[in-house]
Length: 549
Image (cartoon, rainbow, N blue to C red; front, top):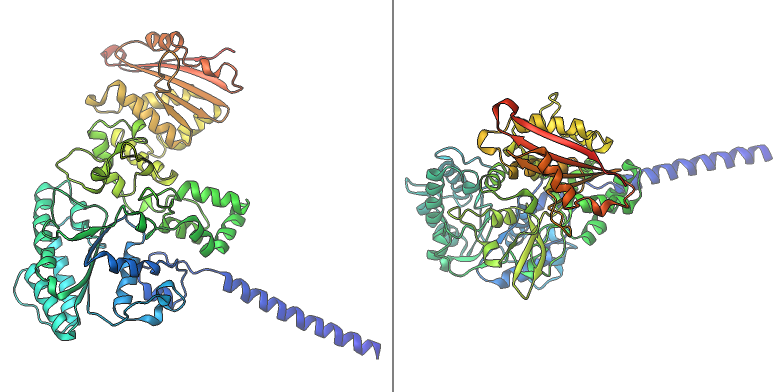
């Protein structure tokens, strides 16, 4: 009898064990988050159970802002999802908002006709690219309201479409425009096509004012607000909320939102990296956080990068690799902006919110496109100090900028890839580093051979090697060109052009650039360098000394 009882107990134990295993397995499945990478449709995210950070609480205040609202944010920062969320609201799809902030608000859920124009995905480098895309967008909306397009201009078709949508529904029309400025940013170096697209967009969006009586609400997003282009110059009641404190966090995620919504994903990433939750959060913060769009806003994470990092369980430059800011890098390069001084540049609010390509100043566009962000706001001077938001952006931008200086960089097998320079610095092989640098500098175009270029290239290399670097470090007797810190090594550089190595090294000593490291336990190297254009000795000459302590 005891034997039978024992068998029963064993069977019950095994059954309970199976039930517990199934429960734990299901629980782990429930804990797995679905990351909406590349999904910008609100209804799809909600209906298919993807992770969603609730931004619907902004709907009510947006409606109070006025009839026409504009928001500038960097690409892949959540603008398209915000527009899709507004689209679902204006269509009266309240069931999608169950449990969200908007569902608890006193809102008018009566459906309105919605016209949406998305310029995000098209390539506008073709001569007639904008015309073709406008035709596609208009046809989709015309089909929705059963209207046959006539042989008229896109502007006239837009006007007629607004009238038809209003007449069919007897409700004022909602107009949502996503990435209005892409037809300009894509071709900003083609002046003729730029001006053509500018005129077409101005004519197209001019309907917003002339059709005012038919329009309930219009929301326009983009990266930049072009002051000189004056696309919306006729729309004098356009409310720009891009730098309003109340809407600073409308796109992007605060750290609280990140932790509240993605804690399981952060834990999984921490396990993959074999480190603590807090260490992983710090790594995410350094790489993807730091965007600030208004003085009283929160520091924000880039949603696209975070989603990819959690999904792939890797911290990499996901956002930056989705597009190349070639024209911005060339702009910085060609206009003599020292890359060592990009962090810390200052601007007024008026300068930051308007962009004109007639003005040779890339800083406002770098701010609006997300390559620079607000580091500090000084109320007394009304100036904004700008800086790179995070490591992902700084490293990515500097990679492209270095290639504008030296196209040979990062060529595999050439000895000029970043990993080779990095190994040299961290192993103390400064002679090898200088030989690679000499090869790189020889390949520069003739007009680029000047002291400022050598400083810029060396500084960019140091940053890309992951070494903390200081440009023009102020000492009590002067400023060194560059000081680089790589593990157990410190490197102090002084560059000259068509002078002499001896002069460069003498300056390091006479001004005691390395004096501050007299009691530093690290090995300190002093590097005096001169690039000579004389035929018999053309190239980089250098002398290296190890500091004696």
